[in-house]
Amino acid sequence: MRPARPLAAALAERTVVLDGGLSNQLAAQGCDLTDPLWSARLLADDPSQIEAAHRAYVRAGAQVLITSSYQATYEGFAHRGVSHPEATTLLARSVELARRAGEGAGVGGGEGEPPEGEVWVAASIGPYGAMLADGSEYRGRYGLTVKELERFHHPRVEALVAAGPDVLALETVPDADEAEALLRAVEGCGVPVWLSYSVEGLRTRAGQVLEGAFELAAGLDQVIAVGVNCCTPADADRAVELAASVTGKPVVVYPNSGERWDAESRSWQGGSTFDPSRVRAWHAAGARLVGGCCRVGPREIARLAGYVAEGV
Image (cartoon, rainbow, N blue to C red; front, side, top):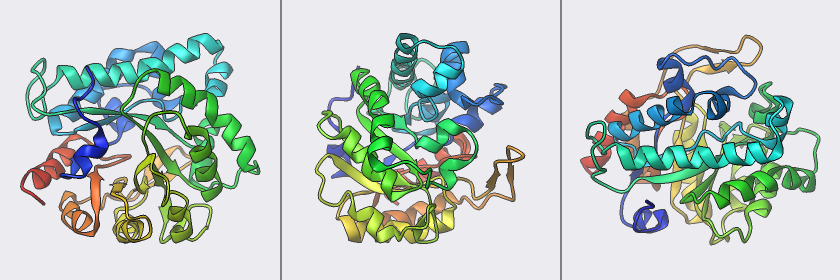
């Protein structure tokens, strides 16, 4: 069952809590993610683990669940011998699993209890670099044109839209050119979107000035929120006010733990700097969709949700 009202309507009234990192929760559940498909592998091999991870976040207070389709692409599945029709089924399954989790675990409640509030499903559309599984999503500049990137993203957009999510999450976008391609790919699809860049300082990972990158979405009614994710909390702090001032839209912000991903060793380096109390400053600057990304788990989301419940 879908929520009774669109997510955009809720954002006009209050701050809405996103979930945290899916991969770290799956790892905590004992799942092996050492695969180019990352968490998307479990869509075929063990979907119950994905649903369990979603439920953990709903119990922590998340009101938006981001699907496991971030690294799920037709090309990536084809490399594993998955046919095009089978891949379409797996993409749809990512939405179905999140929807079931939202219906089957209460916000702040226990397993099997009805939700105390609305739980929306955001279908994740990660960048082209995520499919390459070599850290390219933290660099951008793949050597492809905007048109080529649009052609890459469009089939997955179609498949996820057909599965009936509440919103499309165009997330961890490292490059303004790819943002343009994604916005073209979703145009007219009938589902609202949010656009979220991965940044370093006040530039995209590809080095473009973030103000100009945000401007791409400023006049698009389909875009219900603009912001950043999978960056350090400190970079998120700086980006929120800029996103609000440039676009006039609600801001979406969900940084990672502050640790750094080393693509060569495929491991996280450094310590966590994620402090849920940061949500107070984010809200004051215009953030209305708040949560965490990689290495931010249910415990941190529960604390963040507590601040939101108190009126931040």
